[in-house]
Length: 144
Image (cartoon, rainbow, N blue to C red; front, side, top):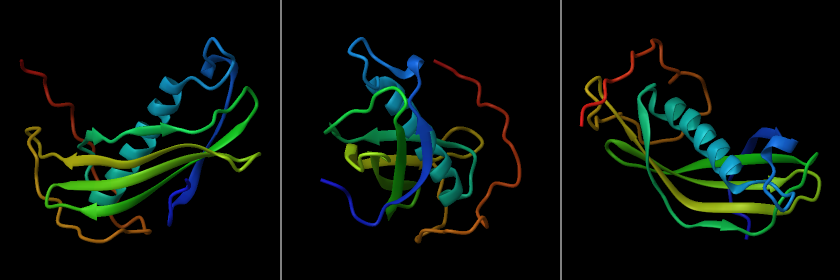
């Protein structure tokens, strides 16, 4: 079932390299696109280039796409936590208008310069570019 209040801004063209052995859109490609789009959305909503995916709820694939189809991805913030942002996602086929998948809950966490959760200070969705990060952080070194 389509989700409510989602704006569709990102579009993708399904190409041969995006297909699975059945000739339909590979779920892994689609999830990579969603995670990338959700990351950009989280960065713009929390005003920080250091955000990470914490959680994705059940992913409900309800239809597919084939080579040449145009798909669109939509996201909307549903909750701001102290250090997190929760959102919903839907992907649909632009040609058939059929929903391809829905994700009820994706959670991102805002990080500080040490890679630890940090308050972001926001409580509402922004549709402006006022939260665009003004600097780029070097990567945090991985330590086991």
